[in-house]
Image (tube, rainbow, N blue to C red; front, side, top):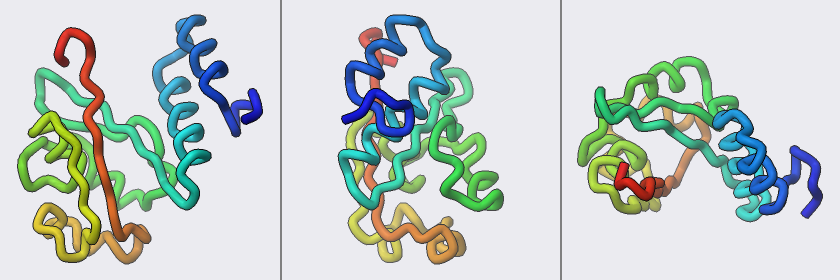
Length: 131
């Protein structure tokens, strides 16, 4: 892979980390890197607030309408909250192969066709401190 920011490689990302680059820039770069590895994917990253127990989109929001981004704002985690909310709640990977019939996506059905989403998987990133 190229070292350009629109097609980053792992060394490029590690260089960002070593230079203490702004977290949003690092996460946007990681998203682009993953999208290069998984053709046809839309990679988003949400930030978990330990105090409020909710998620907010920090990377990948450009793929979604403002209405859907608003629905994802201050998203409370829980066992039936899409893939991201459930993954944060369970602290484990959640795979939704068909979100049109998956129970975790009932409250988001009105967005699915317009957002062109049909499947989703989420993996929580847990720090060395367990956060």
